[in-house]
Amino acid sequence: MTVSPRTVDVGGGAPYRITIGPGLLDDGDLMAATLRGRHALIVSDANVAPLYADRLETALRRAKPSLQVARHVVAAGEAEKTLANFATVIEALASLGATRDASVVALGGGVVGDMAGFAAACWMRGIDCVQIPTTLLAMVDSSVGGKTAVDIPQGKNLVGAFHPPRAVIADTGVLRTLPPRELRAGLAEVIKYGAIIDAPFLTWLDGNAAGLLAGDDALLTEAIARSCLHKAGITERDPFEHGERALLNFGHTFGHAIEAEQGYAEGLNHGEAVAVGMVLAARLSHALDMATRADADGLQALLQRFGLPTAIPAGLDADALLARMRLDKKTQASGLRFILWDRPGAARVIADVDEAAVLHVLRKG
Image (cartoon, rainbow, N blue to C red; front, side, top):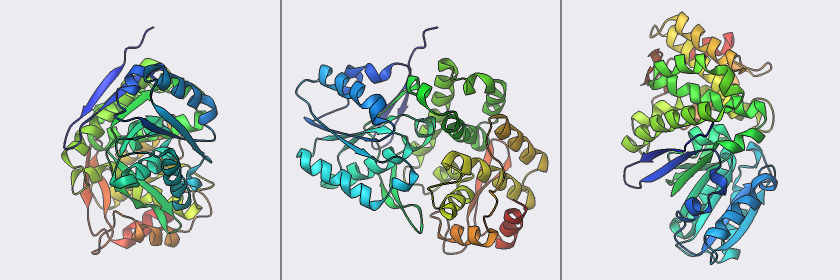
């Protein structure tokens, strides 16, 4: 069955288009149309570059022969999203002689997209970044909305900038080479959109779990488009996370604390940590008399159906996790702030959450 590409347009002060569907990586005209100048730096990692960098570069050169293309490849993994590796991307732009109309082309998952986007935000005070996400997680989350950052030992994404992409091109065909664990991790973020804003989407996901896990192009295109439509609407209304955009962090305060306490290099990946975090957020919602226990149990069951973890990994200390949350970007001077829900599809920001309630949920894990 032929799957037609879907598009989602993101408005606001820096509008751009998200294009989703199989086979887009070979569409040089589509990609070249997003490049304004004569320089393009392809940033990728050691896992993705051997699979797709040649195809991307060939398509770009065929569509725009005058383009000066260079590649910069970093080691793979969240532990590589560092200031030191960010500096190597800046050095690669300098070696290319990138001008103010140059483009950074981010070919990879969230680590590559975040770091390449941050370099684009900083080079000459801001050049274009075209996001070509190669993981489901990046397609529905990090490539959309313009958040760019690197990690430091004290926490995840603490150094970064808001820098909307020039375009996002999501080729669902590349997901066929994605390890099943990474596909499931991306589905955690897809489920998040149902949890915060679209309860019927949760029902749709439940009914199509087998096909999504099997990598069905039509189902994945629909899931990605629906997720991106929700994120695009929220980020367009709140580009700098002053209000509604915070809802996208459902599960992330807990999840980021888990990731930071693990040291990023091992244990749960980002999507898995968010899956656990969403269950903990739902349980905290129940503990604060906002939602029912049945709603939390239902979310946990759906996540488990997609093969995702729903419990804090053994060996992580509740007090240490709470200390990590105090440093989280979503925390305010007055106290901890969480994204909680009244029911599926109805999330809201809750400030000054009692730390005793958080510790209780963490210790039950």
